[in-house]
Image (tube, rainbow, N blue to C red; front, side, top):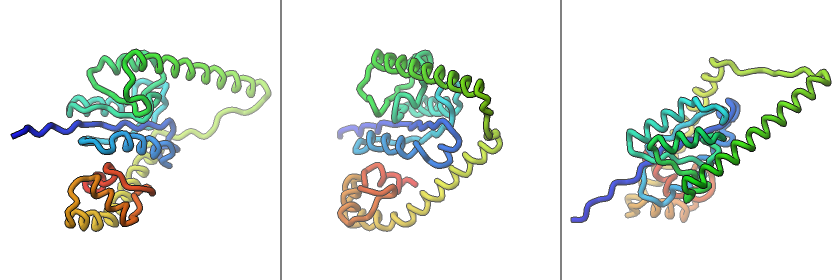
Length: 226
């Protein structure tokens, strides 16, 4: 008998730069859709989706550290939507590549280590240029007498925003699953066994996917695994 090949495992890492983006979902949905599109159709398991709200300039990111730990534990590949979701820092990318964890950027999945270093260097230079322009603009505004500074989000409030965002997403997923699972179960009972076949049947019946548009295998798996 032929041996069953183990499914490839992935850990998805999503990052936004501000608490407001994290709470609203701005940027996250695009990243999540990019990762889902990249994984669609393969024989794989998404171990976990890890979310971080942190500036790309900082290297001490606990959620990324947790994602890398998950990758090592499950022998999984870290998957991100874009290289700049990791960091605009050559040293950081180098350390990551030497950590023993495989990672894939959806926007350039075939890139080798040399190309990744070049892309990281370009992104780092761009970040430095933006920082210099911002500082110059702030200094000019200060010299004109403009009052600088604004309302900052406290650590406690930031934690509350993250918790509320996670709770809202959990409740939304639960509602969607309750609405869609009966249709998926019926299609399975009619003989569709693969995720692709179920997705095709859902599309044929004009049942809208959770985020709108056409169904894909990854979306069916989410409904079944929720």
